[in-house]
Length: 108
Image (cartoon, rainbow, N blue to C red; front, side, top):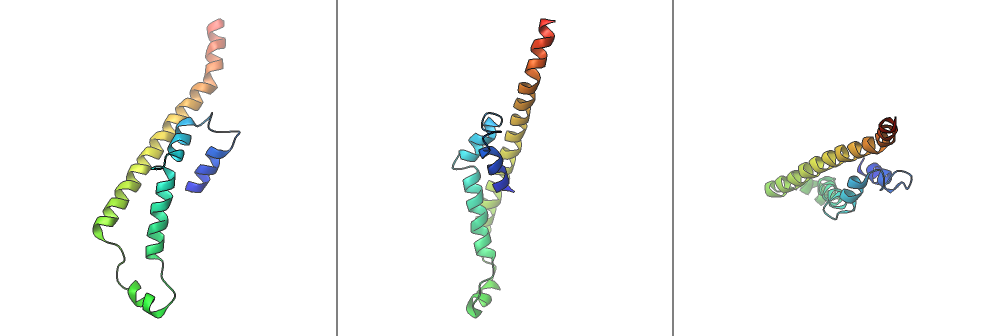
């Protein structure tokens, strides 16, 4: 889903002029790139390995409590930032779309 959001922002017909706040969030190194990196890191640690020794190691939980808390805290912050950013951009789009109507009404 995060890759779909990036594709949306990179679509020249839509962004960054239509979704400026989202474009900034996704270009920020602590934004989408870090989120994807955190999720890929978790995936690698949790995926079962192929060899017998690796299968035995898989029986031991691969994550440390502090590491999990830190990752979950970051992902929660990113989710909040993404939600807020989408709200800001949605408001921006509505204002841009309604501005010509307001100008015409003011002239009448």
